[in-house]
Image (cartoon, rainbow, N blue to C red; front, side, top):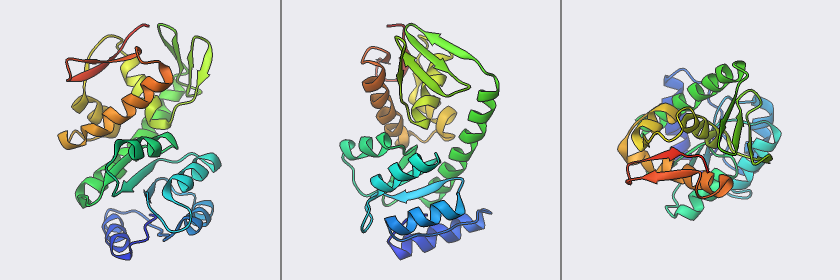
Length: 219
């Protein structure tokens, strides 16, 4: 847990400890990186605004050292800020103030996704949709033969859409399948990741259908 507000950090730590987690807390970016290297955590809850190194730079350095699921906390509501956070490797985000119950649910969901990704990699399969090729064992994606770098969440989302090309997946369904919860208020999370996928794969690869969901199509 990386949070400079001691009240929030203490509350989250106590709640997660009650859930059975071993929680370490850092109050700034430099301290977070030092604790990260020492503890090798399974998941990181990271505040966007920190003294010294901000949350974006901390996330970038963590992912470069050893990929880990990151839930980013932010008081910033602008979409640009959220997309930047997702772009440096954050898997999910919550805006302050947040529900403690929802935070716990999202932490559990991130850990379940890691387990599912490990199981998927064992299958050693390749999915192809048009000129998009997905290597599930190596977790690599190619478009027209050129590799495209995706974050962990973008990759999982693309795999789900690629399982049934052309089928419309409602936002709530994708939330349940990828993030592990289906609260309607969190559908903006899906929209943000889809926008990132469109930038990387091409605007026509993932289409919005009647405003209710998304489908992967053959360009």
